[in-house]
Amino acid sequence: MSETPLVTEVLHGKVAVWTLQRPQQLNALNGALISELGQMVEAVQQRKEVRCVVLTGSGDKAFVAGADIKEFSNFNDQEGRALAETGQRTLFDAIALSRTPFVAAIGGFALGGGLELALACHIRLASDNARMGLPEVTLGLIPGYGGTQRLARIIGTGRAMDLILSARMVKAEEALSMGLVSRVVEREALMTVALDMAHRLTENSPNAQASAIQAVQASGAADGFQIEIDAFGRCFNHPDFKEGVAAFLGKRKPEF
Image 1 (cartoon, helix red, strand yellow):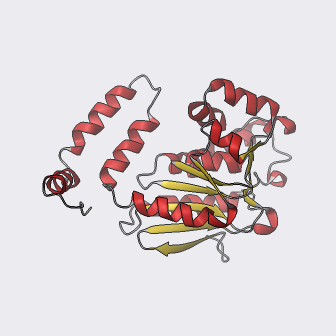
Image 2 (cartoon, rainbow, N blue to C red):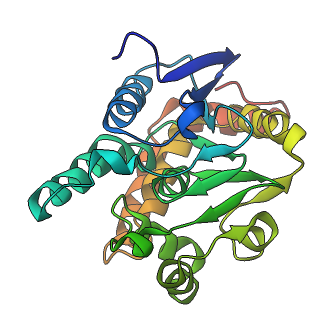
């Protein structure tokens, strides 16, 4: 990792808040930030004390305003392919398939790779000043960090085509209406609401949540239903199932 952290962590009980720290660049994603954040995602899989991660950006203007275009302005096709493949494998897929739930707290701009980062998270909340979009076609590119796939799954193919081909930005309320985010709150309340949601997630079975993430991510796949069946069955062998049933029958809160 770099000497000056590009991502800071603050623990709130079982919730880790990760803040991207490139405010002068509106938290634009560069290679160093993707690498550092990817290492943190990998490490958190083994950190049993962290049951949920809230991901947000520093400053008042942006969650992440896109990728750092200067880094790839002179790339050829092979370098572009490697850029997308490395980024997806290192960070975006790692978050999407994380056993630990990720909540994106989107304040201000979430554009290009920034919106793709939010799309990789399992839950998205937005402030009322948020602006979201995938403007890659204005650069002669397409979204390369999973945006074409995840956006279509989340909001439907027609709406995804609209946003990607037009490159237009949407305001928070439109993003809410199309299912791009789960909730819109005032800017000052964004982190409070995100932390409240994250704390509620930590009350549930981490094994069941990990299994649910795996099954939901397989939705639309040819074997999606079979993955759900297999994941459902495995839950019965986990101690969380025994505790959950015992708590229900004993009329108490489970302790996972």
